[in-house]
Image (cartoon, rainbow over all chains, first blue to last red; front, side, top):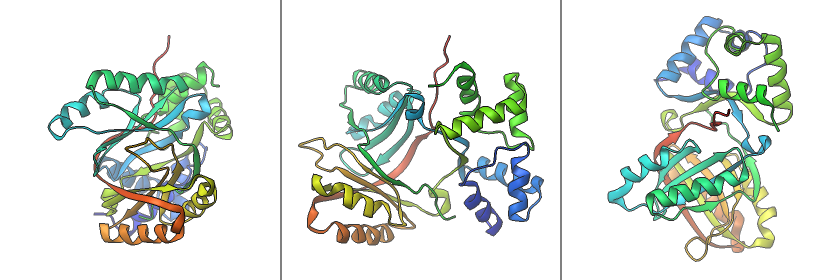
Length: 148
Length: 160
């Protein structure tokens, strides 16, 4: 379980880490903790998968690449087999099961705009299931933070 | 665009930043460059928007936010900019995008992600969105996530 200190750490660590030699010491000081305690708690929360990833968030579009949300309607009996094929693609950055006829929703992240279509086509070929692509047309807000 | 050194830096960091006292020094050492050079490069990548932030991605489920609903809406095209901005500004909406429809199966063009501790809470928030959209919304649905199947972030291919 998370205590108040863990929650304070999680809230702070969803904001940017400073680019200095000892960034965790800087954040620990802000939170009134020692650097060693902050690192121990971060390690524990990462091992417990409360934190799924810690590090830089890259914007594929800023390096000339692209992101695209995609969806497939996977028959229930084939779900695990299709999942294995889809997740084997390194371009699949996130994948969620959802309650809908379109029950597999994943994000493709590629180094070139053409990479999206190539990856979607490859997945269609391998699975025999249509891949619907929903690229973003407008981004209204990404309030990525969650209050822990 | 990024050069070969930037690419190596991104590859070294895409798995995450080490949880050690001097993480940048450790990564710089692995890359065979001075820490100061790495920090300068990272600072430039941030300024160009290649790095959005260096931060933790929390697992919503483990934080008790066990209900995650992707609310989707068919909103009149000529009103989506105005209404999308209003929906995106709601404190409980974590992502909000206009996306293309896939007719006839998928009439929805506005996507707004809503998180809550249970489905009742998500439904209450969804009703707030519906009230704002009013007559401009012709159809709606919600897709709850039932399982995280993968979460890794961008992976660059090895080159050369």
